[in-house]
Amino acid sequence: MRPESRPPRGADPPSGPLPRTAFLGLGALGAPMAANLLQAGFPLSLYNRSPGRDAAVAALAGSDPGGGSEPLEATSDPAAAVAGAEVVCLCLSDDRAVRAVVEAGVIDAMPRGGLVVDFSTIAPATSRHLAATLHARGLDYIDAPVTGGTEGARRGTLSVLVGGEAAAVARARRHLEVVGSRITHLGPVGAGQEAKAVNQVLVAGSYAAVAEAMALGSRLGLPMEQVVEALKAGAAGSWALEHRAQQMLENRYPLGFRLALHRKDLAIALQTAGAVQLTLPITSQVAALEDSLIAAGHGDEDVSALARWFRA
Image 1 (cartoon, rainbow, N blue to C red):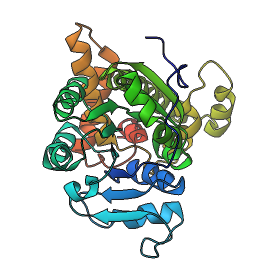
Image 2: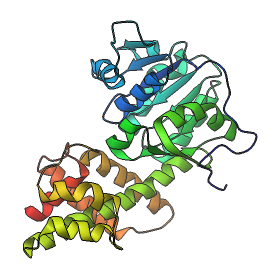
Image 3: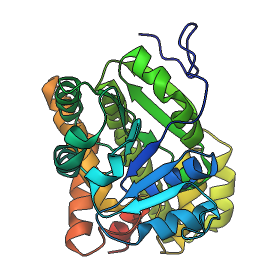
């Protein structure tokens, strides 16, 4: 299937009132994504395993969670969150969390004919299993992992990598276009997760390369701010160099995407590559660096904390 960043002919999203939506998982990415849906006018119910995150969503959306000015509800029960929802969005940390929430609430509580949009990054095989399980209960499913970090989540400019049936993707289009500026339908369920694995391999290599380059330049005593500005415009330019080099130089790592979650994603990428008999030596090396940093207590820092390895 040729990737499309906009809906193909005959697959326009449905018009009419915005569908009642549940958003499950309000972490660093999920909270701003849910806030953007709220700002766009979607009637929204929220669930998060840790309580109180609905206040963060309301704050990001610029609304009062108790004032009744926005169509916002929150619950500590995933089944209650999805009851009556036409569309359920998931943005959870890993395969186990997604399966637990789906099996604990979504399957039995969601009205038949509903749609699950899974923004989580999980194994392609898990997405295909969930799709089959939900389909047997009269529910549609698409995998739609995102890339662009917390910056893109706040601005609604994420790149959304989608796998699923064309009709289901069209139903989700209004949601996808709120959270992302580029929506690419790559094929059947699982294709989005496979593309996200490719993305995380690139992130691993680019972040590690920037960290290594910053270490070399610093050790040589170069004026690194000037070096970075010079290199941004050349062949070495990258998102990681543009957005993470300075904080690596300053040895500070404000959260964009947690190192521990990226390591989880690299495990998925390595497993996916192994299934097609492909060895990823660079990714394997970065995974080992991340393992050492996580063991040292840096798992909750941004992926750019890879620079700590060179300082150590």
